[in-house]
Length: 130
Image (cartoon, rainbow, N blue to C red):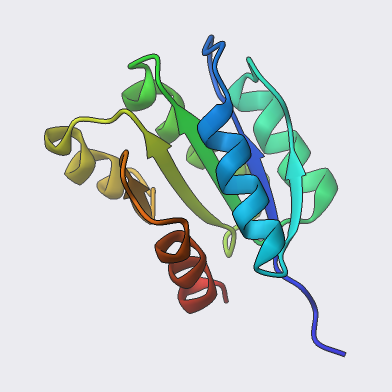
């Protein structure tokens, strides 16, 4: 039996709006992934610990607050410190195009901005999970 891809969907920081994260979580679940949703207002430490405890293949973060340049790299740092070298970390939300290269340099595998088709997210994950 093939192991299903496990994805942690997380909302780091003080965002109070999670509609986009829930849409993505549902699309991933409909695509056959196991999805764990952490809920709103998670710290990078909470996200990294949940990823470890849930033994996920992917962390998918969504942010609207503008704190992505601090929070996304911090999650990557903590995840790697916990020994999760093969966990794919992706991000999405309201993120300026000009910030994307720095986020990728910090270890975010891909950044999905508003208007991205959920099928594109599914295909990216399928193609990049080790």
